[in-house]
Amino acid sequence: MNTDEVPYKTYLTEAELPTAWYNLRADMKKKPAPLLNPGTLKPVTAEELEHVFCKELVRQELDDTTQFIPIPDEVQKFYRMFRPSPLIRAYFLERALGTPAKIYYKFEGNNTSGSHKLNSAVAQAYYAKAQGLKGVTTETGAGQWGTALSMACAFFGLDCQVYMVKCSYEQKPFRREVMRTYGADVTPSPSMKTKIGRAINEAHPGTTGSLGCAISEAVEAAVTQDGYRYVLGSVLAQVLLHQSIIGLEAKAAFDKLGVKPDLVIGCAGGGSNLGGLIAPFMGEKLRGEADYRFIAVEPASCPSFTRGRYAYDFCDTGKVCPLQKMYTLGHDFIPSANHAGGLRYHGMSATLSELYDQKLMEARAVEQTSVFAAAEQFARVEGILPAPESSHAIRVAIDEALRCKEEGKAETILFGLTGTGYFDMVAYQKYNDREMGDYIPSDEELAASFAKLPKV
Image 1 (cartoon, rainbow, N blue to C red):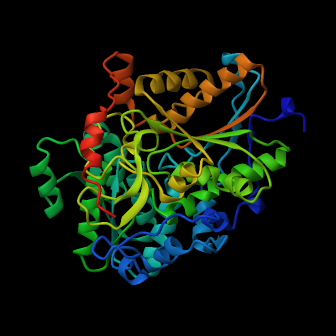
Image 2 (cartoon, rainbow, N blue to C red; image 1 turned 90 degrees about the vertical axis):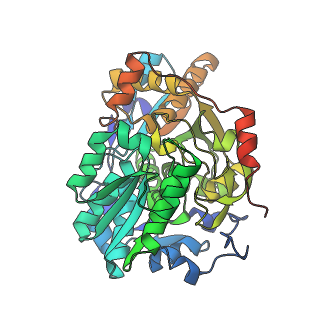
Image 3 (spheres, helix red, strand yellow; image 1 turned 180 degrees about the horizontal axis):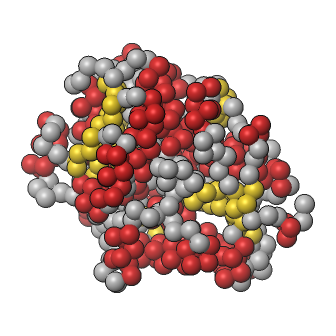
């Protein structure tokens, strides 16, 4: 097909929807390092993880050999309420930039939760219900994961307890209220509800919190209540597995159009949307079937890839979770209260960390004022107000399209638009009122955090 004839939106039919998730780790010759028990420094066993996570999710977490894992019928039925999501050609953005590049985005904001997070929330809630649990606990940054999980739990009749990073709890009251509307109990983290929360507040008086803090509290809440398990919205292999539906749909839509992207871009906090978007394309690269460039985009205020260390570290600030080998800023690092709450995590997915370490993908850190400039430019020409997290990918997509303009190259660019920003108006207000700043941690701050990495 002549790419000049590509429609604005491309959808798969219901019959073309994926029926299995793709496990990228199965095609990795060098697998991600195993999770370690912090007490024994030996690989964690399924039995140990089952005290925290649902049994089926533990099985998925430890499986790095099965290429495709069937999506349960009940999950497929739920997906059909909002999937497939559209692959959109950004004609208006291309015209505004005057670029020969062809820009596409996979839009995941066309569901009630407002983001891609529902893809994994539905799966995890289903497995919790199938196991006969009373409820689940979790953390949330910007609130997109908490919103998605509360919606999924309401559907399956589960109790949902959410620990929301304190600065986001205060910045995004309406997203908090959406969670409560779906029946979730929402607590600002660090709180005084848990032993770990009280300890963090004592060590960091007045802290605005972080995803690492909220994870610690949610895990403690899960293991101290009968009939509860903890679920996570990013970072873990099981979450990247569920999010592979994004990339599988995108790949199928491109195949339908007869188009192949040259460059795939995604924002990166813990890695769920990026890992899901790139999965089938990276799989082709690993198998030697095709080649692509991949760029992970992170905030300059929390630069795990670009300034972090590849080392074993705790997945949470309270040091109750297993050790994971990943690019990390240190479990004690608490980033500034920037407006991309979903990207305020000290580490990165073990799978993506290994791929980055093998130089199979690139990473770029961007400052939040430039991110919001890109977000407003995109909103004005494409008509969608993007989430601050997604806008990191938009920033680099625009930069790459302008590079194509300078070099006279008609490359095809794909980026992930993970959700909408209609609950992020405080952030947009700060930008429009010129009250937004760019905080970048100093080398000294990072060195102090690296000094506390566990000795493994």
